[in-house]
Length: 517
Image (cartoon, rainbow, N blue to C red; front, side, top):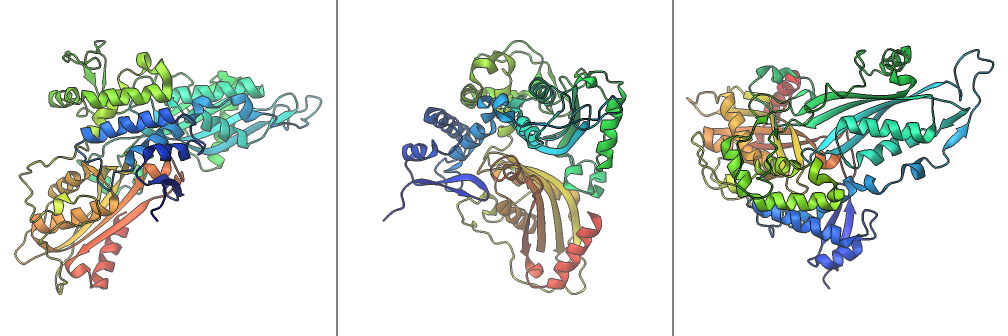
């Protein structure tokens, strides 16, 4: 008997849809603590299907057949904060606690400073719909001889993070909610945020960076908010807050400002427009756009060809607008009118295309594996060979960014590549390896396939018979949703030639990588 359609939770997913009947799946899903409105879920599923087709994907392909449902569920889960009531979250978690009496000092429930550090959050950037990472540090000064349950700080922060947000507004919203509901003498927040951006490989100093988050995939910014005694930026109580953070090993600048003027308009690193004409949103001919990069360098603005592609993808823009209408109502239309374009611009970097690349000649079809479990035909040399007297040539910490085909979320990290050339073969230069990595990243991917494709392509196009490729990556789908394992990372390995059987050679490569990372 065939299994009935169901949603099965697993460790790396919000759930996997088994079966072919979406209606029955929606019936099951409505009891799964995300949304009781099947129409909302179905609308987002339809919109994501349009996006996949716009990327040139076969929506019946095994690897992405269930992607629309996964993405729809993630959007609803990631914006459920709109339905949460802050008063209900705090509830009766205000506990009586005596303070220091007779004005002899501050402490306990009267004037005591409480600092909660390292609350990790993810939220959807309202400017581009990509998740951004935040680490919250919050302080409050107790009053009225009562203290608040510490878990409530995380719950209140989560309620506001599960909305379309900008970091400054997220900090302001949390600060105001805590001030209004626990009535302290003051509340202060420091929000350290990181936004995904495309890696830049021109700077060779990046090879020596010490951790994945030090690589140029994340763009860091800090935001501040204060109320009550913390409204005065020069109040010494801010120093006490900073000192308690530093006591926990947290480095924060002592230059504190609760003004958003410095950070307004430069948060999201993706292209924005200052042109008031929104004809591209209405399907008309595009105006002369005045573009700026908003914080990520001089070369990230939209080119004329990019604008042409966006206009050609008007159905994708309409699909994103429908997603916004479901998760944010009509309020997005004035405030977030450019968000659909930015999101489509991001997705368009992962279009399933077959460009002719002059520097690369693939033998067989290793470059076009279908993502259905098959490896694709190839005549890449895969037999074990001798490596006596040969030196490993290697490139480490090549940054990359790709898009998970299961969740339409980025995964990014670094590639480490070792190879042994055949006789008389010159060393493969770093730019060529970077181009190979980038070529395979610019499509919907899974890390295992990406690792194999890079190894096969280097062997085939660079005429080397032995290759080892290691990818280390952070997956936003693992960190921002589902299991929410923020500190997790994934490593994958592909080997060809003598690296298959020569364990000493492989160990030598790993040792070299460890020495440089």
